[in-house]
Image (cartoon, rainbow, N blue to C red; front, side):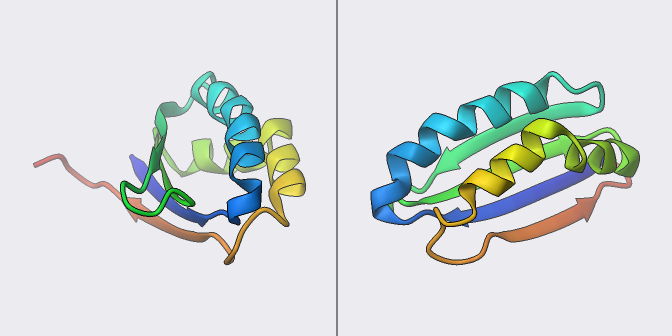
Length: 97
């Protein structure tokens, strides 16, 4: 399994636009065959900071996801919505504890 944390810091004036458009990304990503979970969490203190937590069956599922139209379209639209570049961390899960 592959786990991804994508830290997103949205410009205050783009927050509502981001929230409107990210729902399509989430819905379509959850429908992908290799997806296990795909959730967006909002920082409790800073309403412009979010983390996307994704779980994928394997690396092939991640690669497929990164080539989907909904992923590419969101990336193209959201490019100027962020205060800082997204920070993405990827983890390989070898066993569950």
